[in-house]
Image (cartoon, rainbow, N blue to C red; front, side, top):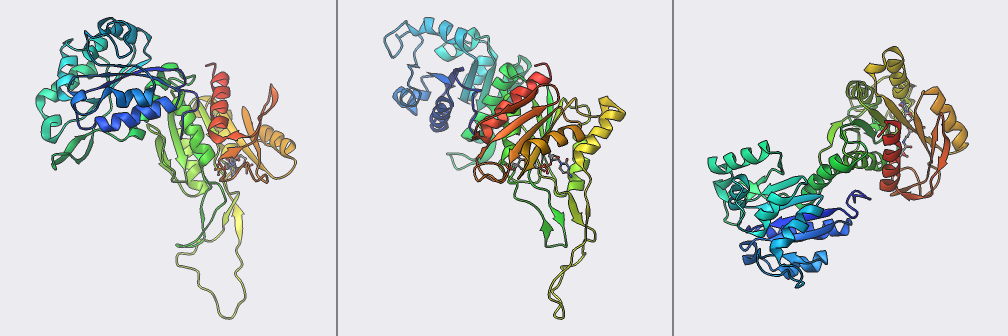
Length: 415
Ligand code: PMT
């Protein structure tokens, strides 16, 4: 899911060191650039044994810095001055891959190349993604250096377990681009986001109300809008818990709580939203469930034409949350955002839910429109709140809706 604005205009210094994993750094530099970041690549001499600066310049469209003493690739200032400029303007220094050698130099303040000089000059967050073959990562010297770096506030993207170029297996593989991008967005979100330090609970997907071990009643919700809100809240620096019936790819760093029925969702919402800053109910919760759930698969009866199901009311989760907040405000979320899925009288029905469920904001969407609501990539919503009326948004991507909603949430929380 593309970050909508978080990375736009952000200065990222991407340090690249001498590991075979540098081939992944090209894709990372490309994805960061596509997301709007300004990427300045700094390559060590060992990195240049694996790949040329031109490759990075082609994907970033910016000069690549390689040698502490030579003029930069555009013939501008000598690069030993560049580290000051690079360091000063950076929003993030990301070293991916980071070899054992570079980690050792960082840990002991050595500064014999442009990357390590820049690492001492920056005042922005530093994120390292170690990558090394075989048992090197587990070696006590590497672990001791990492411990030192973490104690000094450097953020670590842990390597993954897998097969190395050598054919060996173990922990030391550079994670794939989505994980690296997620880590970058998490650090930038916590630094620049309007929800930094906040705890936000989001629900997504259609609940599944069982009939028998094989069948359940559900609805057309895909979870896309809820996942987009979880991603946007994560990008805004929040700690996000996503309570979901859907199984879309989880946004990096988000705590996922899988549920099925409305009852299970209710229990999870009451548990995780206790003392949270915000709850956003984007899930499509079934109002009814089967009165009797069969322990065995329901069989067709030869002597009857059909099957009669008796349905009973499900709990109204938002009404329960309102009850909890009324009894003890500290026991519930500070701000509650609901959705209204309507096929007629959109605003009137949404206004009634806003009041009846005692919400701080409701997002009304007309689910009868072919380009809004269930399962599609876009949505057309109206935001209603008790004190500031209504805000009609044009058709836009669900990520954009999510980002706008997160901005309103930050305002409600005094962000
Ligand atoms: O998931 P997608 O495919 O992306 O589709 C997005 C969406 C259309 C599902 C989403 O935008 C949306 O409208 N979600 C709310 C769907 C819904 O249940 O709306 P409702 O008007 O029936 O319920 C109103 C509010 O009460 C909702 O916040 C709902 O989560 C909540 N509710 C509903 C029933 C219930 N028993 N308990 C609840 O808390």
